[in-house]
Length: 172
Image (cartoon, rainbow, N blue to C red):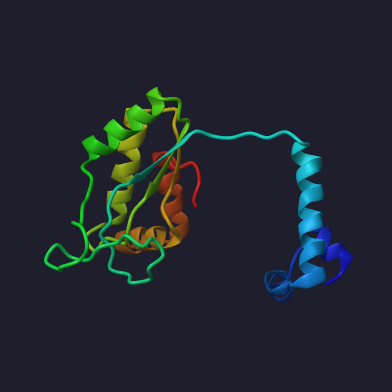
């Protein structure tokens, strides 16, 4: 790995990006040092934090990836705990509660629910913004975005535009 690549002085090709991800030992240390230097240049030695409320709006998911370790299948399946979908009113209650307690951001997480469409995700965002218009919304995994776009028959780019217009601030 070149020092220029480690310092980010040039754009990365796919091969270079792969090299960064596979870096070990001295190469990984060089990447970490470059990242720390960039952090010091951009942010100095200051430290900040955000008060965030995590809201899991559903635990129903048809993927079996075990990433979240709490997803459930259909209501008819005998799994640990009960599958749930939070009604918009409950999502809004939690958002308002978070805002009143000083949160400036909500993180929305859920499974890949077989009945959800792109409109579902848009409606969830609108419910959040209705409850607390100035709250930053960090939400929706790449799989949720793909599912939403697919169910609406539009491109991921167009769906992301719709999500942003509905109040999405950032993606995980």
